[in-house]
Length: 452
Ligand code: GDP
Image (cartoon, rainbow, N blue to C red; front, top):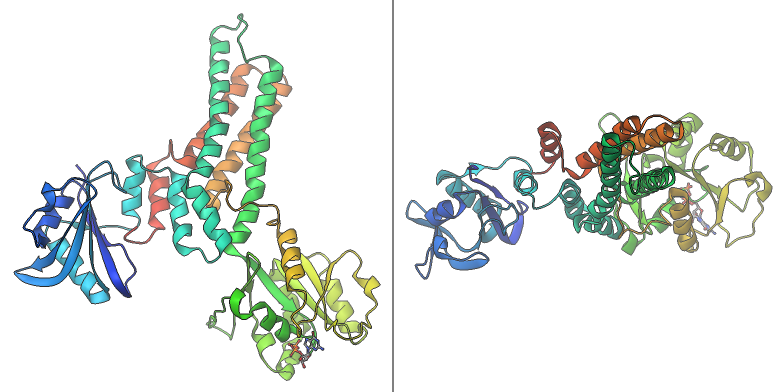
């Protein structure tokens, strides 16, 4: 018997409605103690997926009018009996109603406890559970689509397929070990090797897509560099143009770090330390080349801006030298005017001609960033691993498959190959949660908020 838990499931703000969720064997009994329907009917008399209108009453006092919706196990989010009570969505109101529910037999839910119960009751696997945070917190359309794809089971389907191949290979190996003198279907060298190679290719592809997916979800640490007056602020303004930007300011603790986030195409650029860009030219000069170099070292992407109306000087050349080994895009700005730059010094770099002032070159820039970050070829509706945990499981599975291939090619015994295949399967089981320790599960759901 699981203890009955309750939490506020909607944000604590000002909303037209807010929801208290109760789950567990006593969920309906607890709800019946605080919810009194207008018709006099009790929630325990309802079938699943039915609702009643009434009042939340505590100690004879009506707190609010409410709608209570009943879900009967196993047809609920958690797989247990669930009641969702909708009341007016004010912070104090929701807290008062939750208190009434807790005073009548429910326990306060822990972080992620509803979803953890859903997982433990087989309602969703870990890849679907882990997609929920993304569904809630997505900041771009692509990020939302990635999370949605995982939520409807795209990642599990793909992993299950690789896993099924490995499991059947494992079964053949076991049969072979039991009857080494028999011909066993599917266990000739070639088909076995091709099966393992196929698993390897699929895992490698998933890991490659993971990196691109991470860029879509988390964005890229970017820095805009260039001499004063080349047009960095104007470029910033172009990037944060009304309909395609989110601009946030984060006040630093030890110094004035201003961080802006702009969305270019599908990709969030986290523009760290843009203080220099926002301040006056004098200040920019005082920041100095050392500081700029520091910013370049830390960035995943450098947008280096040059003014095409004046030939390059030593400062420009020094900047070019300092970004030689970085993911960088050379932005030649002010191309609405005559270009006086000797473009040959940019050989080997990604270059782009724009006019930040006139707003030209945005599409090209967005395309270039997508190409550089590998997101250009990623379909956000496909199976993309989410989070370091899933990546780590996939890496372990891939390592084990590679070792199985090496053992096979190196002429080791089938038992030795089988051990590697077992390791690969175990890593995939952990990825989807088919076989996972309590410690791992606890760790995953701890990251959720209360109410999820
Ligand atoms: P920053 O010091 O690098 O941030 O440069 P600003 O963005 O403040 O721009 C310096 C000057 O160049 C301003 O007068 C801008 O209007 C001008 N400017 C910026 N971009 C362009 C452009 O694409 N074309 C032209 N003609 N002028 C530009």
